[in-house]
Structures are given as structure tokens and as C-alpha cells.
Image 1: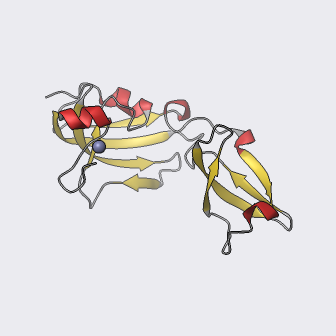
Image 2: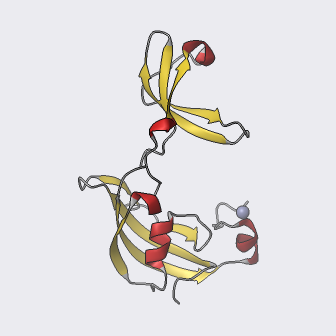
Length: 160
Ligand code: ZN
């Protein structure tokens, strides 16, 4: 069975950055299942996987624009310290939940803690980076009706 829209794919993957450092891998765990064609993985990788079969593997480099997006300098903002007073253990590297004007939640990372302001970065940690994937396809099956309605994969231990 080939990978195409509405198939559930289970794959092993290793993701490296330009410096060949491993950023993420499924090695030592179960293969990662996802519903193909529904934006559950970065667009550049969806493109590469199209048509692949069980047992196949490949190396793929995905440009930032087809990965987690370009890095936007205006995603870095300074917030007055008063706005963060509820947070007692504020430290660099901490992830904070924020909201845009329309109320959509997003995560920012604390970059710098000054005397009166805190600098946060709303870019995805992998924004601006070329992603180097090695993937191997372990299983391909039809999605269930529920999975298609929800737009994501259900497993034996987790269905919602
Ligand atoms: Zn669901």
C-alpha cells in the first residue's frame, strides 16, 4: 500500500540539523503514527513521503519554508516584568503560553531576563533551520472513519 492522503503511516525517523546533531528521533521507541495528508507533519516531509511503501526508507532535506517556517525577527519581543509577576520561577529557556490579538494560544520561549523586561521569542525552536530527515516506513493502513473526521490518528491506548 502506497502512502497517500487518508492513510495512516507508521514511521521511524531521525531529524538532524545542519550541524548533523540529532534533534529528535523515534529510535528506541515505537514508530510514530500519523494521518497522512492532514498537515500533521511538516509540509516538506509530507511531499517526500508521498507514494512510499512499507520497508522503504529515505533521506530528505527540507528547507525552513517547508519545515517550521522562516525565522521572523519580529517574533522576538520585550515584555514588561510586571506582566509576568504571577510566574515565580522565571528562567531562560522556559516556555510560556501567550495569546495573539484574536485569542489564539501560542508558545514563547524566554530568551533573556533583564531588570525591568523579559525578552521572549515566539518563533518555533526549529524556525529558519533546514531539517535533515531519515525516515523508514514501518506500516501503512487505511484510516478509520473516526480518524478522518478528527484529522488525526487514533491508537489502541488513546482515542479521542
Ligand atoms: Zn480523535
